[in-house]
Length: 250
Ligand code: PGA
Image (cartoon, rainbow, N blue to C red):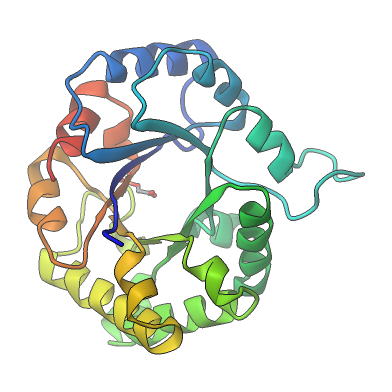
């Protein structure tokens, strides 16, 4: 199975519903490469409104987080059935900001990915190392350990349905981007791990996105690496013209 090219926007905690609707309309008015799967991961408050807009078929919406339980006394949390009912089809799982500020562990993130899949949501499963780990040269080992700990909870069939996003923490929102070679090194390592653990067909079919200061100026070169299948884009996704330029960089 040929893997998809995916340009995913991560709006994080930005925009009001009205601003988000305007941004989505502006984005969809651009000439977007139909060969790319576009995913707009917006705040949960916005998703239903976004799903009611008339958008091209290759533009999907996603949440930025989900909880593992389907319902119950978990004040403030959003379940997978709730997210699904907005029209969202993707969910970011394990973003480094969730790991750092909300103490989400590898094991818990494995549970979240499993919950998402059981409700037909595609997880965009994030991994990545901090600057200290990169400087010590332990980045590949670190990311492999993150993935192994989370994926231990998943069946091979579940792993095959994931999208993975490699996001070096030192490159997120800093303006500093991993070089295309640094991105390729990690993406190839992830793909090799998937091949060893789940077989070549699964490894070849999973889209692995790069995230961390992707911009129109660097997207083409990064997306051009053999194991990079797209990007998870924060800051540059908040402007329709810069995100559409990134979508059109494959
Ligand atoms: P950035 O964020 O593009 O602003 O670096 C990426 C992300 O955190 O997903």
